[in-house]
Image (cartoon, rainbow, N blue to C red; front, side, top):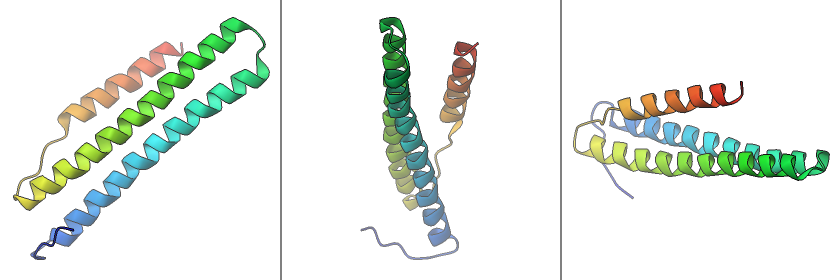
Length: 111
């Protein structure tokens, strides 16, 4: 474990970093659960092969997205932690743009 001298807002910043990681973890688990749920619901309700193929593709997409969100959350946690130790904080403009574009793509895909 890393031990830091608690000057100013060090403890508060690191606890906020942990809360943010837990949010990424919660989001990834929700996406993975959604992927499993889609696979099970379509398997039980649709007997056609075309529907099963679509359900499988959707399930794999959600599960993969959940794993990617988890990997990003871990990377972001350690990146932010290292930055705070060195007195800097990495900007998160890239993830804001990427997640916004992914949400837009998901909305357009459902139309």
